[in-house]
Structures are given as C-alpha cells and as structure tokens.
Length: 160
Image 1 (cartoon, rainbow, N blue to C red):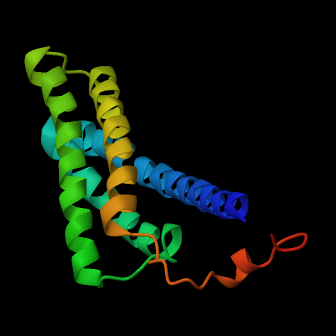
Image 2: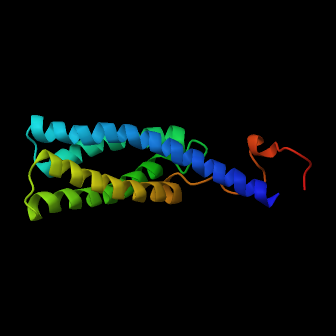
Image 3: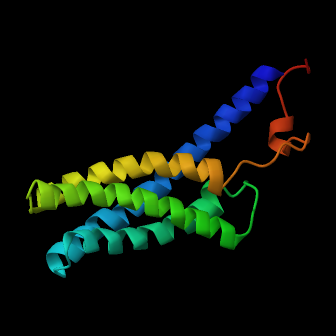
C-alpha cells in the first residue's frame, strides 16, 4: 500500500510539473519575445521592457496555474492566492532584473544577444523558484482527510 501512495504522489507531482512546464512555456513566449518588442521596437528601457512583458506573462500564468495546473489544490481564496502569487513572482522578477541589470549596466553589454542571454538566465532562476514557491505556499496540495480521491482508490490486485 505504501508503494501505491508514493506512486500516486510521484505521478501527481510529475503531472503538475508537466502542466507547470506548458504554462511556463506559453508565459515564456509572451514575456521573452515581448521584452524584445518593448525594448527594440517600442524603445523602452531594458528593465522596463522586462517588467512590462513579464507582468503580461505573469497574469496569464496565474490564471492557467490556478485553474489548470493546481486545480485540485485547496482554495484559500482568490485574493490570498493572488497576493502570494504576486509576492513570489516579484521575487522571481527581481532575480530576472538582477541578471538583466548586471549585464546592461555592470558589464555594459547593450545588445539583443546580451539582453536575451541575461533574460533567459533570470527566467531560469525564477522558474525554479516559482515552481517551488507555488507548490509550497500558493497552490497547496489538498489536506489529508483520510479519504482518497476516486482515481487513486482504484488499484490493480488485491489490497495489502
């Protein structure tokens, strides 16, 4: 029985990670090319470009993660979830801005390749932080009630 519970938990985490990855890929498509558009087409500053594009991607990610990735999670209320989501995204955005700012202002590398490499490094660090913080504090796993969800009740073979 212990093995099945661990398998169910591992399967759920794998599914969450896959969904988180899909949501993140779409948010990435919104934010990274968006930062380039804001920077090189609309002539925003490097940090402003990253912030604006990331805010758009973040709004999408909140909705997709809340209603798809962790739709089975406890609900502490939209306002609380949104607040925590914003706080953790602000921390992740700060990581991203530190990478972009260091490249632009400390290394004095002001070109599309440097912006994108720095932005990608920041996105990578932020993504690791986001998955951990969303799972831990924003979209928590359902509380143990002693009742298992229907799809986890079914098992092959006799009960042990």
